[in-house]
Length: 100
Image 1 (cartoon, one colour):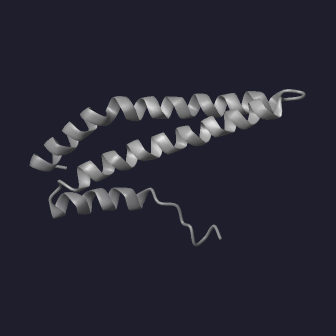
Image 2 (cartoon, rainbow, N blue to C red):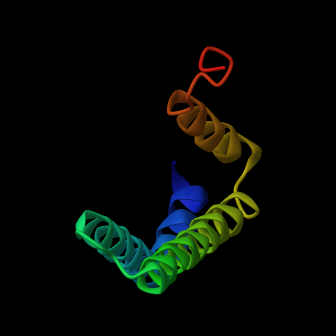
C-alpha cells in the first residue's frame, strides 16, 4: 500500500495490534490446555469440556479482532488499495474445491 492507504493501514494496525495479539496468545494457550488435558490418563470430562469451551471462545475473540481490523482498513482504502488487499488475501486462500 502507498500514501493515504498505507497511513490508514498503519494506524488501524497500531490501534488493533495489542488486542489482536492478546487474542492470538489466548487461543494458543487454550489449545495447549486442551491438548494437555486430552493426554491425561483419565481426564475429568467437565475440565475437558471447559477447556474446549475456552478454546472456542478464544477463536471467536481472534476472529472478531481480525475481521474488525480488516473491516476498519478496507472501508477506508482507495479502490486500488482494496484490490491490493484482495489480491494478497486470495494468494493465501486454500483450494476448497480440491479439498472436497
